[in-house]
Image (cartoon, rainbow, N blue to C red; front, side, top):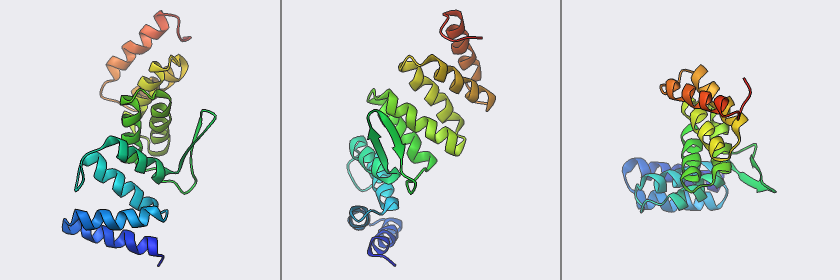
Length: 171
């Protein structure tokens, strides 16, 4: 077993025992050596404020490492070995959305929707695209959310109707 994996496993043991300081130490060692599960675990600790002071900034930093996020000339990608966990992708999208980084938010919500079929990510992707004035993608994702049975489908049907009435999308 690799050292990074041993540190992660020990971190998991400490976390389950409630020894968050020791868990964080082991996760940090594993994360520094490239263990993506440890990076996600640290992101979760910071996002939830478990054993550390809550920090969306630090959570985002670790989540981006865990999924192997790269940005090149405005194009976003996740590495082949990156984690595509539904909760992590959604949290990453939310942090970006609330920081007005709608392009990144749309990317993470779309990734979550396509990878995990998350109906809430579909609607969140639509809202992020709306904030980017990307009406076609907003329309597409609202439609997918409605078709997947999102509980706010009636509201999204109204958003689609407004887009059509304003000439922003074709029938």
